[in-house]
Structure formats: C-alpha cells, structure tokens
Amino acid sequence: MSSAENPHQSLSEDLANVLAKTEGNIPVGTLLEEMGNKGFGILLAIFSLPSALPVPAPGYSIPFGILLWILGMQMILGATAPVLPEKAKKRTLSRGLTQKMIDALNWFLKKTERFIRPRMEWIGSRGGRVLMGLLVLFMATLMMIPIPLTNTAPAMVVFIIGIGLSERDGIVSILACIAGVFAVGLYVGVIVLLFRFVEEYGWHAMDQFKDWLVAFIS
Image (tube, rainbow, N blue to C red; front, side, top):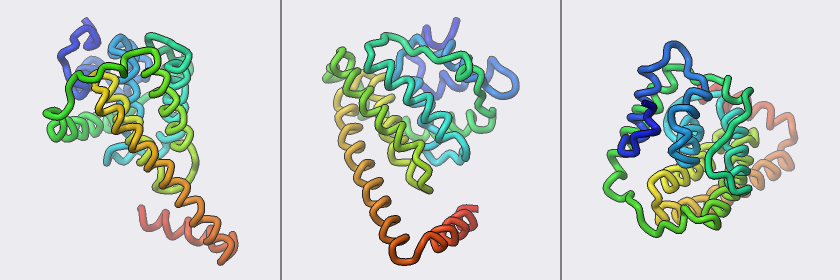
C-alpha cells in the first residue's frame, strides 16, 4: 500500500516511507506514484522544498521550477490529479537531499501544525485551484530567473500553497497570496537595484560582484 492511501500521514512521514522503499537516488516518478493521489498540494510542497527551506540544493531551482510550472498549468486547466511527462519522472533526488527535506519538514510542521487545519475550504473549488495555479505559475517563473539569492521567496510561496491545498486550509492559501505580493516586490526591487548598479559601475562591475557573491556563499 502506498503512503498516498493513508491520509493521516504527514508529508515528512510520506517522504520517509519513500526513502525506506528505495535504494540510491529517488526518481521523481516514484514520488508521483507514492503521493500523487493525495493531490497537487503534496507535490507542490515537495518540489518547492529544496529552495524554500534551509536545505542547500544548488541546481534544483530550474528543473523543479519547470515541474512546478507544469503542475500550475494543470491546475489552471482543471486537472484533478497531477501528471508529469516521462522525462520529468526519470529525474532523481539524492538520498541526502531527501533526508534534509524530511528534517526541514519535521521542524516546520512542529512549529506550525497547531495553526493549520481544514477551514474556508474554497481552496478545493474549481475557482480556488485556478487562482492557486496562476500563483504557482508566476512563482515558478520567478524561481527560474537566474538572480542570486532570490529564488527562496517564490519557492516559499509555492510551499505555503502546497500546505494549504494538502490541508484544505483556505486561511493558509490567503497567506500564500499575500506572500506572493511580497515576493514580486522583492524581485522588482532587486531588478531596479541591478539596473542602477550597472548604470553606475558598468557590466564589468557586475561580473566582479558575481565572483564575490560566489566566493561569499562558498
């Protein structure tokens, strides 16, 4: 029996079960088989986790951004269950990253589980899914823009959407919309600052800044 058939398990427990059932890296298709029946919310939360929470996972923002974009589009078009292309299903998560995701989820859920519950269940309606799908689509696009240190904000918005959908919590989904406005504001501010920086110091200074930023993160 897959973990998707047990609605009482937490997302971190679902991930732990997938980790226990597989050897080596975890195919995305395996995640879909194990948890796809629980709806879009679970997959949105999983695919946004590496960028949303303090889990170092370089290189995942663009491929996971594409997966989130696909899921958002399916929500807008009225799909009742997530479907991914075969190429996407074959992509894998490292076991180390999956374990870090479980640890981060456990920490997050312990802090928030008392506040999250089914309420204002408009989020499960056709209109609610379309609204959340549009927000996912926009946030996934922002995640894939190659601006250093800015993909965390839209990924966190998608993560909150995923939690809201999986728990049928309309209040959490409203908070996700508010957080999305702040994420857009962050990107607009960063882009304005970049243009002013280049205008003041030239493109060569941007290369120097990138080198410094990479060294600082390392």
